[in-house]
Length: 309
Ligand code: SF4
Image (tube, rainbow, N blue to C red; front, side):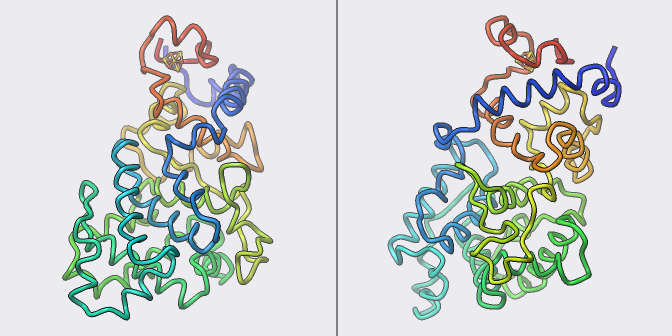
């Protein structure tokens, strides 16, 4: 019989915490960066480049990891033909004739998105930096403006602003809006939540540029705490949540992300999203096959509470 998530937590809470911690200890390591688009941020020293690369890399992080990594490699190599400082790309392109600008990303393609979509997205990032100082400062300004009390509302307001600014690009782009998912539309917003994790948490993997007190922000006091983050939920995390009966929703949406975050808070109230990278490895590295496989399941710490076997 399938148990409710509340029953499951009361009967198996300790086992789930052990599973989360053991998975974290096993996979939350730089040795696994190769399997994640976060690797590209670590290739840059300048935090402005890390923020810029992170923003675009997170939005293109859909599809399989091999595809994502090869698309990002291509995009960054096209950028490097113009500049070694990716955050300068739009400023530099603005000094070039229009026809030349259109050529720079003409070869780029990642599933739905072509060069025009990505270039338009870069112009939104440039708008944010030139208006607020950093993308982080724009995001955090919505947390502090009184209009927003949470990361959810700040994300909603920033995307609303970017959608407004993107109207002038609509004629030349096809799928720009797919890069501007918002909690307001009920979207799970996995890619934005993942970008926020990269920017807010700080350890050997995540960069902490937007953390409260970070020198990177023009207004460090407006930074974000890890406890405010929402879990980036993709199909891998969704499947684990399903195995554990953490969320019964048929379709992953913003409410699923909030529910899963709340459950992770039972294991770490101040930093619930620290489990994201390690849990994602279970799916990305094909550890869990979502069915009983003797040699995998018998050494899986989740076996006592897994609803799948
Ligand atoms: S017990 Fe098997 S099916 Fe369940 S989570 Fe572990 S590896 Fe996946």
